Image (cartoon, rainbow, N blue to C red):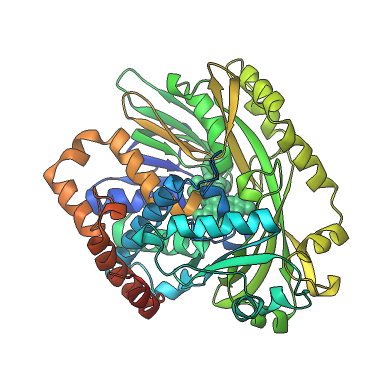
Length: 509
Ligand SMILES: Cc1cc2nc3c(=O)[nH]c(=O)nc-3n(C[C@H](O)[C@H](O)[C@H](O)COP(=O)(O)OP(=O)(O)OC[C@H]3O[C@@H](n4cnc5c(N)ncnc54)[C@H](O)[C@@H]3O)c2cc1C
């Protein structure tokens, strides 16, 4: 389909920029909903899923608000707001349904290659935080979606849940934790690779590696002309598409700016880099079996909450602690130090400055994190594993995140920690900015995009029927429907080979 002559113009129905989990999910949706669509994907690196979606670049948490305390803020009156938590858990249930459908459709050799049951725990210390965790637990127990979560401040119970964390602690320490078996660890890199492999083999999509998209422009016919550099052969090409998705992760902001759509004006990006401590001691790795999330420090961005995680990466059990945040001007791990400077435009310079002024605690936090030595990081780990020794751990660089900065009437510019789908009014282009809660919610985010850009098709009987088949809870709220929750969990946990018995026992339905 793609001509190899300079500046040749060819037609695709859909061009996806970037081969991460987001483009993979959108490509699957589109091919399942309309198999005759001609789709091309352009990726600047020599393999798919090598940026944020790679297992070592993210934390692999199937975000469901089972352990992440930032989704349950405390109100001024002391009560706990669980509305965000309900949204996140529903969204992950949607992802599990989508992946279960794909298992049945032959996308994966085994679901265990990308998703595994790992208990999710929240762990706090100090009177105030223990009180918060108790209240959070009580508040979450009002929803059937969180049934099965246990709270304890008893040392012997905590020791049975997380022996490594409880070693060498004094009885007088005020600590508490919650634990739920429903949690998962997801290898989003493997998931992405499996989706692309299946799409290439069974659905005839074209994936062009070593192809960097340089710019894009729309003509009066509303077609997009996408300029691509083929880095292997050192030639430039132009392809024409009816619809373009900028799923370029950290590279998305720059391309959105180049598209010149009005809806993209005023957005800026603030890069946050990360590092993990990775355990090298097999005996320690074997002793821990949970994702244990702590509480964020003052000024810390929500996604920088420290956690001690059992991971299953390429079939092997691993133990990671972090992420430690940092600052780099790169927007992609394999990007350029000029990324931040090149992202500045007359439309976003004020929002960027204003967001900087309004987020001084974050700036202070990042400076402190950058200054941490290896020994300081081990000291931070000792809050979780009191016995931790330097020789058991090494540092690894995590993926790069670009937090969204948005124009704001009152403040000039605000820093956002979520994701944002930006679509042109004519529905021919969409971009995804931001990185949290990220890959776990890729299915809901892509559904949102489809609703924005494929309105008529999404309202059609054919697409609605297919979506209902793929996602039985499509269009419904699991938070309002315990029976449906029970049914979809029974199905997804059986198909994805997750902790099935525990779910049935704990569902309380
Ligand atoms: C430290 C860290 C921890 C995280 N933890 C979690 C977690 O526990 N759970 C969770 O759900 N999410 C987590 N996330 C978020 C999650 O990793 C991301 O939301 C998700 O991977 C984003 O997928 P994507 O497809 O948008 O981007 P990416 O996976 O980054 O893919 C974008 C692709 O676009 C390519 N590209 C960029 N520019 C161009 C161009 N001009 N032309 C062609 N190709 C281009 C890139 O090379 C890349 O391959 C974490 C992220 C980080 C950094």
